[in-house]
Length: 182
Image (cartoon, rainbow, N blue to C red):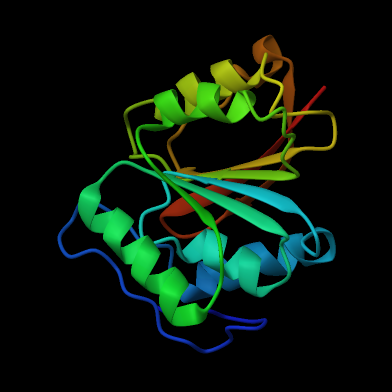
């Protein structure tokens, strides 16, 4: 795995050993960031369930002003910190569960331009996070929430939460769903 473009282009990234994380492949990451490119410069980006930090690091490399990484697994946290040091990029790393981090982030009164999440598949964690974000000050009408999920993940509840699916990009085994407030 590597940084695809920007200041840290082509630098390799470490990934945690074991099966606890599912790194986004370079090809899928490149497709995702080609879709986001026009809005990245100077943006504030929240990377939930960060794993190795590859998504947030790609955002920083491509010009994001601020990236917050949220990850609770110690091996993954070590990878994020090593990858940030190796790429000479700066981000804020929160070593805690997403459910604990979101209320803390609200205290900052910050609104994020992009919120990316790649939660464990099949546990409906994306739904719980979206339920929280539906009434959160972290999101406004311009925030784009991107969920990486398996192809079977149900998003039929979005309208109930005041969201809509702006775009969906399906791959062989997973998808990116782009969600915004109504």
